[in-house]
Image (cartoon, rainbow, N blue to C red; front, side):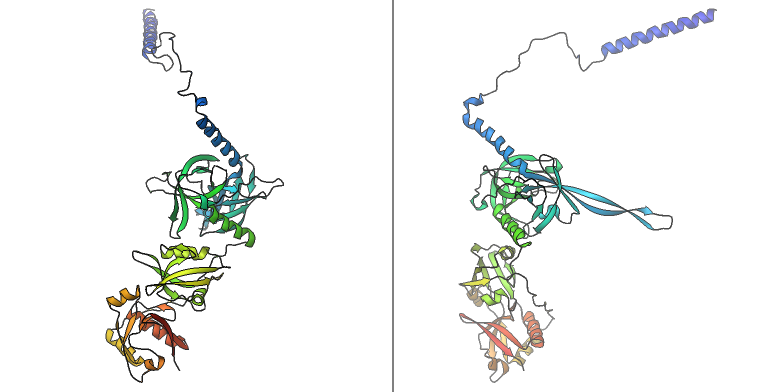
Length: 481
């Protein structure tokens, strides 16, 4: 009985101690809601704004107009959901055969409605190689889109969606009238979040994007992945550019305050060709060209036979300084201008030829022509090359610095002596002639001259030499019986 009473007493004392411990813990533990609250306190929140905007009529109207502008244009901007079907290996079966599983990889982009019939403009890179493309309007209507056509060079594509109702398109503005500092809105689907409006200015014009030298606007309106294909809007609600890329260093792939957009006039030209012809027709001139260090323009290295370039009178070692009224920067710049030039009009081409400016006119072809196969250049000693010229009936020497300066950019070989009664004399070659090309191909080394000459004599009924003789340029046929 005594043991039982001791046990009951121990349980009672233990329970009492536990209760006291819990009480002290609860009293000591801070609570998020209570803190050091000791009762109601008096406080006064600010009831008036820092400034009465009714006294700032311009800012008040500007704030309202930005909202009105966004409301007016957002229904015409669409979000794109694209997916491509892929296959991945998932293991093997009991017979050792590989097992595969298909899955869809999705991405997001933007676009803008440009016709009541449901035509949409976006970027080529957004829809390229995608198996399915869906268009989501701002009211969440969803359509499967058809690709009408695209141009990878300018990175523009045209889609089509169908509905019994007319769609709400936006008008193209004149991008040639856009000024640096002009206010713009960028609207798109960044990171797949849906229609998002950002505001900024045109930071610069005629930026060159990539190796293709695409001329674009630069803007500080926030553009992020997913904005591609969305419009850049002016204060009249017109499309003045299509957003295409951002400056994104490797350490930070997000917005850096530098975005790029394709001017609307360039985009509209592509759209017109796609909708009227089903494709974009690129001009073909028929030349190969290269840069010259620290000089703006493009050096013609080869002119394809029977091409628009040859018909216009272009020759190897012509230095193109202006094409269709545009001053050239680089060889890539010329390539871009050629591909975008109209094929139904004459194009003026200004070239520097032996330090003289010559203006030529060409009408571009609509499809390319095969260029001559490249010629391998074997190693030959100077003595062996001299032997070749002796067989032709002439001797040569390298062009000196004075002649290089006199004829600007010219390379080739100068005829030092013509053998009396020999083959060269019979063909009309004279001492002092500078041979700078063969069959439309530029000569820039003695080894190159030998290789191209032999290749030509083996394949052609006649060989055309391009010769600089004083201030004149001549073409001589080496007739081989």
